[in-house]
Amino acid sequence: MHRILKFVEGEVRGLHETAYLLGFFTLLSVLLGLVRDRLLASSFGAGDLLDIYYAAFRIPDVIFVSVASLVSVFILVPLLTQKEDEESKHSLLGNVLTGFSVVMLVTSTALWILMPHILGTLFPSLIESNNTLLTISRLLLLQPILLGASGILASVTQVSGRYILYALAPLLYNLGIILGIVFLYPLFGLQGIVYGVLIGAFMHMIIQVPFIIRSGYLKPTSFKLDTRQLWKVASISVPRTLSITANQIALLVLIVLAGALGTGAISVFSFAFNLQAAPLAIIGASYSVAAFPTLSRFFAKGETRHFCEQIVTASRHIIFWAVPLTVIVIVLRAHIVRVVLGSGEFNWADTRLTAAALALFVVSLIAQSLSLLFLRGYYAAGETKKPLLINISTAIGVVLGSYALLRLFAENEMWRFFVESILRVEGIAGTEVLMLPLSYAIFSVINVLLFIALFERDFGNLTSRLRKPFFESFSAAVVAGFFAHQTLSVLARFLDINTFVGVFSIGMIAALVGITAGVSVLHVLNNKEIKEVSVAMHHKIWRYFPTFKNGKN
Image (cartoon, rainbow, N blue to C red; front, side):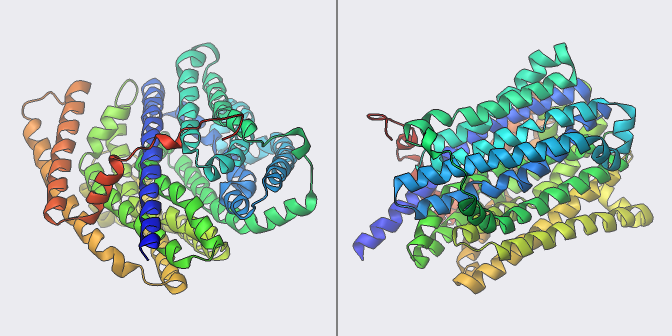
């Protein structure tokens, strides 16, 4: 019994250490992403050119999740975990890379030919006014090829526990885009930024290649096309791919709807979505990625109790971080948007509208973070149909909900007045775009509620074990939000809110005051999670850096 407890404690500590390592590098990547968005906002504002830039990513993104994800880490990590023979692992990876290359080449060629018709249907106003959309959309077809190959290689780095390489990849991706904005845009225009995107995608992939080669993978003899094995992998992954594709198609529809709402709506929606994606990546993605290989290993060995314990532990800590952060972001939303985007062509109206959209998106931060965890939990258990049904249902809900809310906003003056008043966007044109993030948030919450209900039915009690951490985190969040808001009111009398330094200083001080108050509440409540965080923070994480001896890991 003592040995089992030690084993579980070690796995829990490893989960936190891995999540914090991933979270740290994700934070660096997020900061680069915020620099990227600030450069875009200051250069273009929420206007036609930026609408074209964001619209150009829609088709490549759908292709990435619908084709490249057929052989992603979600599928390959459990398969590699189940194989004990190293040669079988090498053969599987080489076969998957070969099949992926063939399928992506055919798909990209077909889309290059059909792109004018697709864009003409989805974004008629953008493609009629400027042929740039067609050019950069075709160039961006290279991105899913590079990122898809990187995702295949990432399955090896995750199974090997080399999370540092996995975490560095998105950082390099954002760095490539920044280089494109700063150095290539002046030379090639909007097309130059796309060159930066492709450079970033290439670095995303190439950073993992040396370790993969030294680990014995990517040998010439491994690159064989075994259609039977590929069919087996594809048959397992199709439900998962459809599940992720449903969400991307829902986002595509929202972007199309935003494009019909007027100039700048796509940019406002995209900026707010990117901002809320930052804490989602740091918290939800970090914990779900950290837990995934261990969950796969537990389930493969039939250790269901340990599997459930890992899910509960990760859920507790997602709640611990996400609940207070949600409140802090809502309170400081305007300061966040002004610091990140508020310069150059990005005016005050754009700022207020983006801040309101951010507040609506971030309401579902907890739900989105937990959904990522439960999704990986089911994939680790080899179950893909239930996540598929849940995600398709909620994706349809997002689309239908957006239509319904847009109609309600246009026809019901009381509803429009209520939304604009509570989000403080009265008198600003284009507030109807806020119905899109509102629908997304509502159905994200519905999504996680369905996951929780199914998980409890399939694996046992969950909600009763999460009530206490949720209550404690919510209590800390309320106190943190109150103190942060009061600090904003006081500091606004003494600091200049019309300068970057003033806005940044006010927001930073208010956030620190709020966090300090929240942490104090958690200590008073004798919160378990904050103790576990402290232990994990003091433990070494350097074992995750790759080291090589005699050419092997």
